[in-house]
Length: 407
Image 1 (tube, helix red, strand yellow):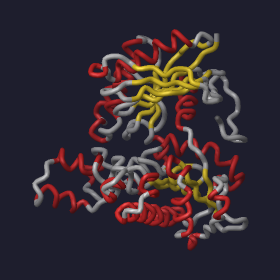
Image 2 (cartoon, rainbow, N blue to C red):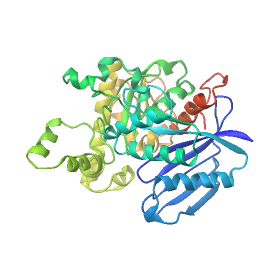
Image 3 (cartoon, one colour):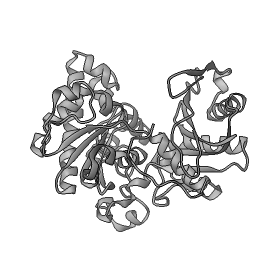
């Protein structure tokens, strides 16, 4: 029987999961993946093998009582009953906010849990549910180790000036600074860049993680130099339902002149803005691209404008641009968005190859372009699995290479 690590990514209404084998302090191909979705209203569990073979599709009873604890219980019971060749040795969790405390993955204990509870106000859309999954797993498997893997950790390499806000020092000292997010995705891209760019992987790279949550990251030497998100996951690009960067005076106006409560402003910025707010139709880029409604077209135009504008800012932080990488749901699948961004970035040396882009090729710029553009699928879960392996199975491990993108 071989050892395995369970990767968990808990959201407000779902728990995504994957099981990875352990080989020393290393892991490669996934054994299976899936999700428990519809938590709180119509729970259902799905699991499938890497080749797409379905392992499980089942309803979970008692929707009105079904929370994250029940989701973890159903998942663990299913693993024990159906996966006989592997022994679970621990879990790795995606945790969105690690604050100033964590620049690397950490073994979870009571102190870590208390620290994460204190960070909930900075990541209300994510942290409470991630903590719920951690606590549920601990209750069902007392003594089995868990590892927290942080979306903020990758950006701790940024220079101090890139992490500051122009506020009095007392607020900076209290932790009000730019943290950045989507770090697990950026870490994966950094890991596999040599397989695509060769020696150019250590150059001036901007990665655009575009999805329902969206951000961009400037890398040099495959380390984060600057990013669009800041203190919370609200800053920067326009997103599916989030506003992105906003004049703070707008918030004062909404509170002081429109009489909105902090809770109402919170709901506005997180749930009713972005693509949904501008279009009045949908937060889904696919629906907006297919729509003839002028508000849908304007929402798409604004999304592209914000990406292009931030690209210029990040290129300035790098002192130039050698390559642009698209990843995330929109970045990987929306050829029209990639085309618009590249066409509006010709001044940076990006020369789109429309045919390669339409065919979904890895490189989507013309040969000889000053700055190349790439489409690289991300894989946050394998980053979590490998980080957890290094802590839970600290035996001599194979030398890491990026000769090929992991599955």
